[in-house]
Length: 292
Length: 346
Image (cartoon, rainbow over all chains, first blue to last red; front, top):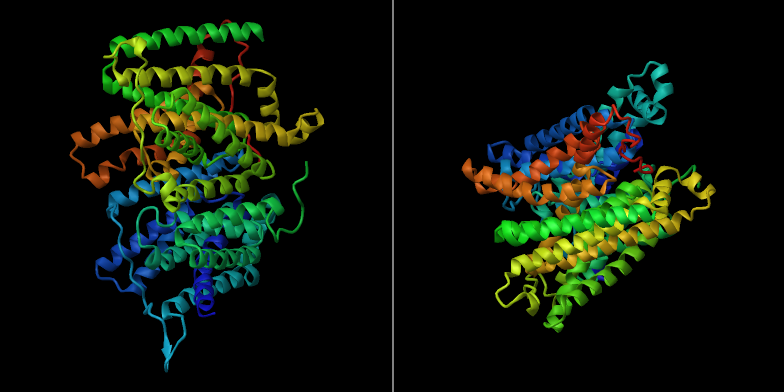
């Protein structure tokens, strides 16, 4: 019972990090019909930028903001410079393009920052909180992780659902042609959407790094698990993606807790395949099915 | 059909004779080693070309299929050190073919990003298996694979590097010969039809799912053969040899070479083997630090991949085809230029 509580808390905390990645993937998918396979590498890169800032005397919070802004810039530049030219081409082009970005970032990071694994600081303690003599099995950093992702999601929800800018972005993603006729700068909206998604990814990178440690491939697995969550929920459905990512977090936490941590990626694969066998479009996808 | 067969057969026999002379008389041991590598990656990339270029299914997990082939050979050799190489190759082809069928059946229901994501998960998850089941697969240290000995007919002093290069080249030529005929024939037409328009393919009586599974099995068999040879070539089979980078390199190779073209797969394999050699030489002559020098090839792959998509989406093979077209324009070539295939919705 005690172990179950520990694994559940771990699963929720990791699941929230996967949820941030999943949501970033869903935002980009909805806007431009591209899966950004470079999302994990972008987050790794911005986390390195934060680490450099800290090593040069910045506080954690300043580095935190710098990383988020860097994420925004990398995402926006990638959309504007690389993805835009292939938008009208067959989708395979964009897939290979984001893989190219992934490869470049993972090759350039060790050139700039050194290839060795580095530790990444936490802003608050990651030792479990003890009240009286009861261990609550949850650390301040775990609470911070969950809180930060929830805040980011709420902010994005308000921006997308309650502001004119969000309405424009949704219109641009939903029907670029009509949106353009209505006077919306569709290209600018897509760039903004990529920027915001990459910002969310950068947040995930900052929250994942203390546990995974920081090295050029540290976000590969997080990306795949976030993607798994997004696929389980349906790539079109932000709420589904978050639920899916939490489910992945919990399932993997139980697998690595009760079976062994080295089989966790295998567990992710099994979940992904199982879900895709039952529902090739994800569990929560609404609307039209692909018909042949 | 039969004239195509004869033409392809003649072409490959001439190439084989040429390569036998080059590897035997001209090349040194190091070049033979690299030639063997090119042959191995050409086999794997050609299989991926059939799957991704011709059939339009994206696989980000082809390194994992090579891994299945390599481990089949390595484990069998561990049990039976005297196992003939041909049997090891066939066993690897069999296991990888079965794995490919399973993945293909799962993947036939998936489209675009879902398939790419599932194969990506495979590429990341499979290297965990040898780590977890260390007693069978040798854990992270890996399994030593002895170099294949040349048959006694060739004499006792026959250089092993030359023998391995011959075997790899022979395997590559046979594979490419079979694939070239397959792609030109009815199967190839069905594969392309499913890629270009599933609805039209179904209306024309093509079993879409079966065709997609077939494409996966064909490419998996190639990956298995390549993986088995890879085990002999590297000499040690460990999870570190089959990272995500291997899968991405294979995809890079077929894109740089020219997606959908078997010649492109071979050219991509040449780039894959020689790019690290060239950039490594460049890096050491520039006295770059090791953390920079080690990652130069990867960075170049990435940049070339992006540039290929943005600037020359038909790859090196497409460039060669355009040049040939320009040369024969006056004669009025009927050969149509291939374009980057439109895979269904990633």
